[in-house]
Image (cartoon, rainbow, N blue to C red; front, side, top):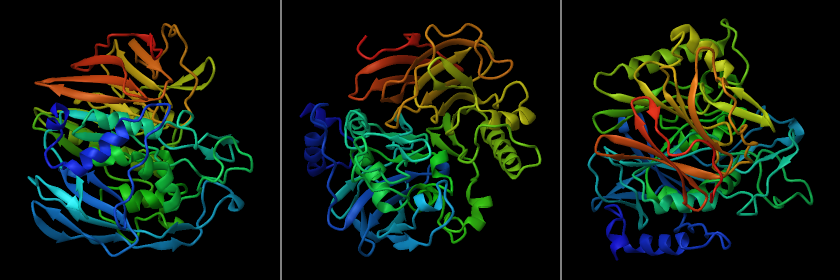
Length: 475
């Protein structure tokens, strides 16, 4: 019963029993996803600008009511059930299809101070205004992509361990989950006799979103509210339709849906916003979905959009007395491995923009820690130069990249004028945790089953990790 006593306020014994059965499963016998209750196929809580929170569900029936502290409030339709006509996608026409959403997305803004929230008898996690334990994950979907001839073993909990990761992360009883982007990877149909992905849904409709994200994420969606960062796999020519229906924290509108490619010039970009972590820390969220890798032409639409976005970041990060963490999918000062023994530094597209605003710093001085995905590995980096500590947490389930070189090459740099002081890294699947005790934030990394790999107190703009170089799970 001692473990139950530590569960957050608002959980009830039904959820505890279900979660206990789920989370107690071993790695060899993977956890079973939480089954839908009634006609609610999925339920979750989104945290957005200023800490605003929204309860959401996907349902094939009329929107249910939300019970808040004993009173019922009707949810409103955010996006109705629909099958969207075929639009241009990142795949060929033969490898694409219309996106079918047989479920409506319903939502209701939650009032500050709500202590008990439930939908259809299912408790929902209650937001904390000062989260102390924040799970960080990224790049969680299962890759099925014809262009790369990449067919991940989506039916194998070892080949695609996101369900195990979500269960292990839920055991830590977080106050908040931060996903740093790329939820959806099942773009094309698995070929006959494919290696472990036979029968998987594909395309950009609800069945694929449910298989790639909502089903396996269920224990973690039930454990805490989420901040969702948009990744390149959620740009409009890919899974952008589901992004706006399900995860985007802003109001849904007719021209911000990704349904019509004529609107892509706007819907592929969003304005940065800040989520407060108490009174002294904030998370600045940036949408870098359309960044790409190559330097951007100063006359391009993308350059102008990102220049405006990073000006907003500078304004947000200048808030007096507040330390800023930054979350965006593409790392500016991280490393990417593309083949064994070969790696690249930073993101040239975004760097070409921020160099015009913060020439040597790359990010505003108020940013102490930058959190990213995109590169499918874990990196915890501190710099000998005055640059924010950088975490890449892209090891949440999709095919991992080869490990960075070990020992790490002396003098390797993610950007001109940036010198690495220390780096810890691994391509092992897993997740991370930001935890605050008093005024001290600590970053930790875990493997798929919740075994701690790394502990790094954050001191100013530096991570003081207890290990360096390549981390091997179990070592």
